[in-house]
Amino acid sequence: MPEQPLRADARRNFDKIIKAACAVVAERGIGAPMELIARRAGVGVGTLYRRFPDRGALITAIGDHYIHELVDATRKAAETGPDAWTALRSLVIWCAAPGRGALATALADLNTETFLSTPEFARSREEWIELLDGLVRDAQAAGAMRADAGTGDIVLLLNVFTCHPAELPARVAAQPARFLHLMLDGLRAGGTTELPGEPAPP
Amino acid sequence: MPEQPLRADARRNFDKIIKAACAVVAERGIGAPMELIARRAGVGVGTLYRRFPDRGALITAIGDHYIHELVDATRKAAETGPDAWTALRSLVIWCAAPGRGALATALADLNTETFLSTPEFARSREEWIELLDGLVRDAQAAGAMRADAGTGDIVLLLNVFTCHPAELPARVAAQPARFLHLMLDGLRAGGTTELPGEPAPP
DNA sequence: ACTAAACGGAATTTGATCGTCCACTTCGGA
DNA sequence: TCCGAAGTGGACGATCAAATTCCGTTTAGT
Image (cartoon, rainbow over all chains, first blue to last red; front, side, top):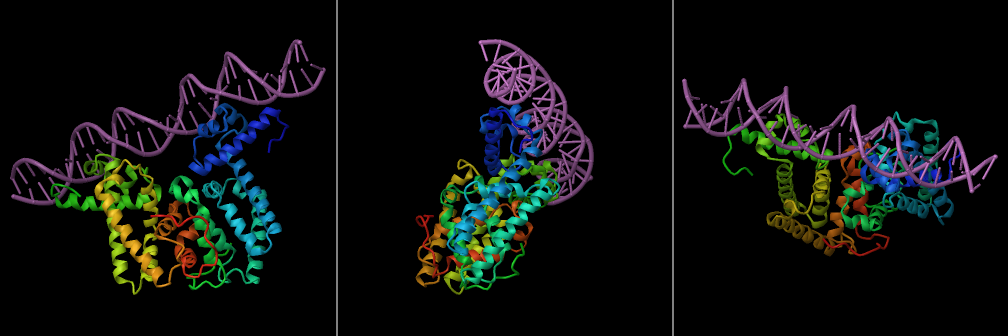
């Protein structure tokens, strides 16, 4: 989101930095060393600091980037999937892709005072919840998803699934799909266990 | 595991330290500040260092403590549960109890060079796998558990579920049972999705 | 009552990360 | 082609958190 048009090379570096920062933050969390990020981007710390005055600015940029990607992916899934359940499933898989979920978890550590309270962020978030909610309702109406779980459950399930990869055994990281499917089956209609507690609100 | 008989008060502190260390490591991982552990145990850092020359020694002690608890819990579940599936289910729930799973994940970060390669540890681990394997086979033979998932899958599913609580949204931490049940249903016989990949070996 | 053992926590040491600064390089318009 | 603004990398000094040591004081146990 640079205000002034950047010079071509600077623009390139900006992108490289965001990308690297996403990866590194996913691996090491919000407090990852700035230098590590710079290195990963193939750039000097000086360059990093020129574009983002401090860690806060960088993290904000990452969060912004992430929420937009998320909304896009959700919308695309809704449009593409032959039916709501399929869309839901592919969205969940998208969210849990290596690094993506971890990034989300890391970002969740953010103080609420940060950009998480920005009206712009709030709007994106709401948009996302709404899309997701629509999918869930449709999937349930179609009888594909058990009625005793809600949108909030999905969000939480995702959170549960998405540890920092660094903390996962290699084999899980290597084929997360297998375990995701186990969980997804748990959500399908015809679940045999009565779930304890209340459906979590979004 | 003190060699020489300790003075009564020292023995008491030893236990308090192990307990506190388990809790703190579960919350903050392997690298948790030693002072935090000491404080949590209601003890000075000096005392902590008197008993455990360095962090390594403390972590080793914790790991040792944990693997034994795990084997015991598994054996007890096998003996108690009216059937294998019930035993399996209650064991999984035991493992994912607040703090327990997180401790396991934290310990998994350990370098293999550490005590994880101790013959004694290896033996305990094997014992555990064997017990678990027996339960899984029985549950599958009884038709209660889908045949396309194995012991290794359970171990990994547990790993997936057990992030550091510090990194989980409060609501997940507050009622993990709900999400566990979703996953457990995914494991029950009659799963509707063909799982990708191979059953993970233990 | 006496001594070896244990205690707590202040003080010191160590190591890591931050963010600044500046000499050098590159882009892109004239 | 040339020049200045914009951009770059990375060494450097300040800061800080945590590890570990040290020692005067307290306590268990005989």
